[in-house]
Image 1 (cartoon, rainbow, N blue to C red):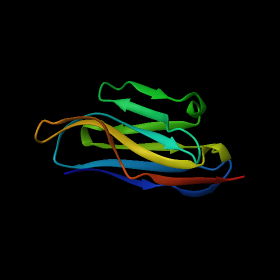
Image 2: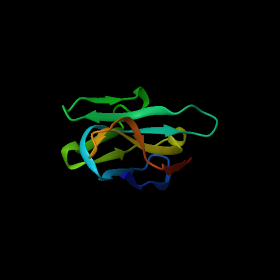
Image 3: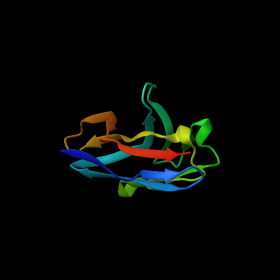
Image 4: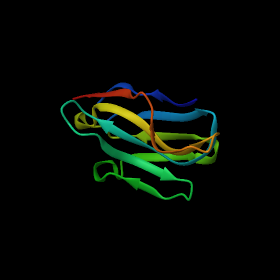
Length: 121
């Protein structure tokens, strides 16, 4: 059994900061990438930031300069530092991972439950 355990999030005023964390737990052989997507009401799910084991990092344009993804994927744990938050950042943030479990089954998009981030204006 594999789990992506998300923490952090909550309510913050515009201009403030929040930190999200995601830990991959369970019967995992290797994790190849971990990142965050978000989904606001009535909108499509969109990429926020993602990091690979090679250190490649991708941010959505609106996150550049405000959000930083960090952590050691080999330790199956990453964080997303979000600053200068805006009302439009309000969404459910979902951790996602590309991984291989202990039975060598490949998951290209394993998902966490999601965590709410609300930015008040």
